[in-house]
Every structure is written in structure tokens, then in C-alpha cells.
Image 1 (tube, rainbow, N blue to C red):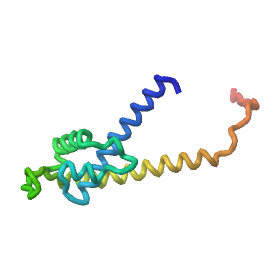
Image 2 (image 1 turned 30 degrees about the horizontal axis):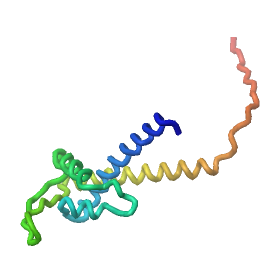
Image 3 (image 1 turned 90 degrees about the vertical axis):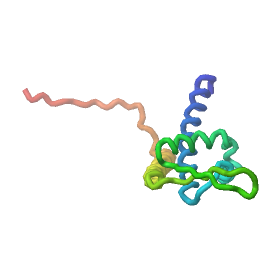
Image 4 (image 1 turned 30 degrees about the vertical axis):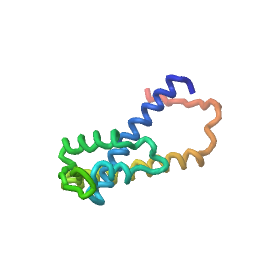
Amino acid sequence: MNKIMAEENDNKITQLRKGILELAVMAALYRQTHYGYSLVRGLAGPDTAGIKEGTVYPILARLAREGLVSSTWVESSQGPPRKYYELTQPGRAAFESLQAEFRRLVLLVESAAGESESQPDPPSNKKIAIRRKNNE
């Protein structure tokens, strides 16, 4: 793959990850409230090395601006107060809708990938003559 194609592919992966990560943040908040670091820990796993606080906080801020997430400061016995985030009612409705669409898209991709493996051989290069009948 040449450098330009690699850069285009990286950009597509970045855009895909942004949308899916936003959905993952909403999914975590759908189940329970979280403060920022607990959310990062909950989302981080062996295949999610790129998820850091600097990635999650801008998503939380954007969701808050859109009215999909609310936050509350809560005193902590383990240090300074923590800002807890939760989905608002519109946020819960948006998540349910986005999750349903995401599942449809995953099925579409899986179906397309499965069909491509079982497709018949492409047609040969034989030419077919088509004659049109003149109705004059």
C-alpha cells in the first residue's frame, strides 16, 4: 500500500473509531453513571489501547453540549470531588436508536463479507449480442 493510500486508510479508521467510541461511551453511561477515569477504565481493554482520558473527555463534553449527558459533582472519600456523568432521557433515547442502527450496519457488513466469499465466479469476457427490434 502506498503512503497516500495508507494515510487515507488511517483517516477512515480514525473516523470509524470516533463514531463507535462515542456509542461505547453512551453504552457505558446507559448502564450506570461514571466519573471520567472510571469510564476510561471501563472502556479500556486489550484491543483498545488508544482509549485515554484525552479521548473520552471531549466526547463527554460534546454529548453534554447536545443535551445527551448531564454531570454532577460528588464528594469523594478518596480525594477531591468527582464529576459523574449520566445519560439524560434524550441521551437514552438517542443511544437506543444509534445502537439499533449500529447493529443493522454490523449485520450489513457481515452479510456482505459472507456473501462475497460464496459468490459465483465472475462472468467470463464473452460478448453477448443484443438486438433491438425496431417498431417503425
